[in-house]
Length: 82
Image (tube, rainbow, N blue to C red):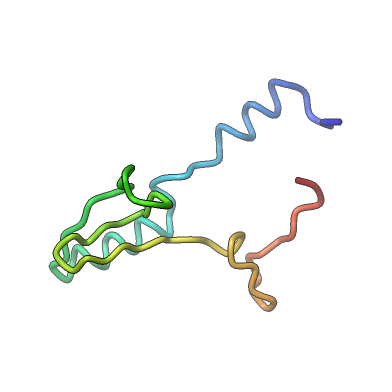
């Protein structure tokens, strides 16, 4: 049972971005400033990597603290429900 109304759930889910997150933008700026060129969110590769450096045959996935769940990370919060 959802504790939020349909409109509240919609606003909450709309705020979640899968592309262009702050950590991803930081990595992109870092790589670009050092001369690396890349493609974003390649749809035909397994897992849809965030960055693809074709010249180096390398992909980069930028995952935040939620996905890693480090024990001592101040940003990780285990969700109360799914």
